[in-house]
Length: 553
Ligand SMILES: *[C@@H]1O[C@H](CO)[C@@H](O)[C@H](O)[C@H]1NC(C)=O
Ligand SMILES: *[C@@H]1O[C@H](CO)[C@@H](O)[C@H](O)[C@H]1NC(C)=O
Ligand SMILES: *[C@@H]1O[C@H](CO)[C@@H](O)[C@H](O)[C@H]1NC(C)=O
Ligand SMILES: *[C@@H]1O[C@H](CO)[C@@H](O)[C@H](O)[C@H]1NC(C)=O
Ligand SMILES: *[C@@H]1O[C@H](CO)[C@@H](O)[C@H](O)[C@H]1NC(C)=O
Ligand SMILES: *[C@@H]1O[C@H](CO)[C@@H](O)[C@H](O)[C@H]1NC(C)=O
Ligand SMILES: *[C@@H]1O[C@H](CO)[C@@H](O)[C@H](O)[C@H]1NC(C)=O
Ligand SMILES: *[C@@H]1O[C@H](CO)[C@@H](O)[C@H](O)[C@H]1NC(C)=O
Ligand SMILES: *[C@@H]1O[C@H](CO)[C@@H](O)[C@H](O)[C@H]1NC(C)=O
Ligand SMILES: *[C@@H]1O[C@H](CO)[C@@H](O)[C@H](O)[C@H]1NC(C)=O
Ligand SMILES: *[C@@H]1O[C@H](CO)[C@@H](O)[C@H](O)[C@H]1NC(C)=O
Ligand SMILES: *[C@@H]1O[C@H](CO)[C@@H](O)[C@H](O)[C@H]1NC(C)=O
Image: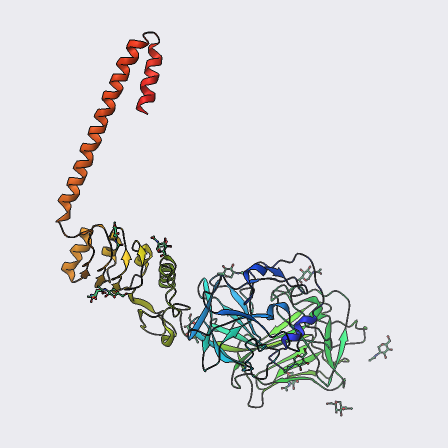
């Protein structure tokens, strides 16, 4: 069974039209020019948008049009990354939600070099898998089911050799939270295959499948197919298996032989999760029975199973399975009393991938991203997780890595000589473990904010060579006594220590005098007007009062 499905086959879906619920879906056509975004796929109605709002780096191009393959629209353009070792998409997700994440890559000789690239992809700080496009002329795709650990999902492409990483499409679909979960609760599931047992030529996905899982047709050489056009109740507490997937099933050609399915998990010793979907789609006579044992060699024997009539039944492994060195061997064996051979409608197999590395503390991530946006910083390394993996941690910041069970924290930030302008960003105060802050040699203006004094972990603040104004908060100056190193040189308009306090008072006094003076002028003017009006318009006292009020206003 092939785990890399041919992308070209995707074009053969039956035409589906109509408004479908794509709530929570993220469908990015990488490299799509903004002017052509969004569009709806003519086959399945999926609404694709350009990726440009989710990544700041990379260049866009199109596959070579002389390419002799049929591609769905989302694979015609791509984004490639000639610069930087790691480039990341940053996507908004909901923490705790289980997502189906699909990434697709079609090289299509876009650069005319005929050099199939290979590179790694990461999910946040963890390596997901290696992508090698050699021999995959039609492209390749990777799928994973992963529970979001924060409200941001970073998908990163990492250069591993000399070739240039690229990506064609990113598709993210929310799943139910209680399905496709590993026993430990923190493993992710990498797709080995997802098939419906049929000799059809067409894959099934959205909108037949509300979660947009792609079901490929598969029928082994020893299998024969049975089908129905009757409706099948696909509601179970597990997940919504499309009716079209359930309307066909495989049965052994030799009615007394078992139905056998084998595959090699990757890696060979991977922990495997299986999801088997059954429905009785034949009309059984009263003297007919179908009963079989479902056996995964070395793992389980679920005996005496009969599929419910025209209703889905999902049998899945709650704990991880391990197949032998010869691969996984699944057999469905007719029980001696059964008159009919076993059947199976659909099957999904996944390998567990443990992402053990925790992401950097979400509050630090939010704060540093806010600082990045505030100052429009475009440092190429400032993508993905700030602290992890260590070899790709952001330039000019340092992190502390206490132990594997606590998320890394940012402890030092050096933004000197970055042409920062505007005021000192308030989000700095959310970097609660920050020890060293260097903002020297920029063009920062406005006051030195008081919040710096309450950032207890700070031991060095370098604000020298900026254009800060006002007076330095007393609370901050007080912290120098506790050992805080505060550098303020080269801010010509900044008032340091108590020397600037009298100046402030003077300014206040002057403005007070000024206000008093202007008030006096107004009073005199009003008085004059009042006198004038009283003389010229003796009648209508109330009118005079009106005038008086208007003048004051
Ligand atoms: C690519 O897809 C075409 C059909 O579009 C097929 O004939 C060809 O064998 C595929 N190539 C590979 C390497 O899978
Ligand atoms: C899954 O769980 C998350 C967090 O607990 C919640 O926000 C989300 O709505 C849930 N999704 C579904 C489909 O139940
Ligand atoms: C999974 O998470 C639990 C608690 O959240 C933790 O104790 C356990 O070590 C984790 N397992 C792995 C393999 O990371
Ligand atoms: C499908 O099965 C569910 C659960 O057994 C049941 O509640 C529902 O009524 C069934 N739907 C139909 C159309 O029979
Ligand atoms: C059918 O399967 C049974 C049991 O596995 C076997 O004994 C028999 O030889 C098979 N018949 C044919 C024609 O292959
Ligand atoms: C079941 O009954 C039908 C008639 O209703 C008969 O033709 C068939 O041979 C029977 N099959 C078995 C296995 O007894
Ligand atoms: C599976 O279990 C059934 C019933 O307990 C038994 O008859 C059968 O031999 C078992 N099969 C295997 C391969 O262990
Ligand atoms: C900083 O923290 C406060 C309080 O936790 C929060 O309301 C605010 O959104 C945070 N700001 C940033 C940029 O993270
Ligand atoms: C900072 O500089 C940029 C361009 O140099 C300018 O667009 C922006 O308005 C400036 N921001 C402030 C707060 O002065
Ligand atoms: C503060 O910044 C200035 C200018 O970048 C630099 O020369 C100086 O060494 C820094 N001081 C400390 C203590 O880091
Ligand atoms: C500030 O940075 C510029 C280069 O960006 C450098 O030429 C200058 O010497 C620096 N000034 C100080 C005081 O470090
Ligand atoms: C510093 O700010 C003052 C006014 O606050 C302004 O006149 C001056 O041009 C600024 N200098 C630089 C180098 O930005």
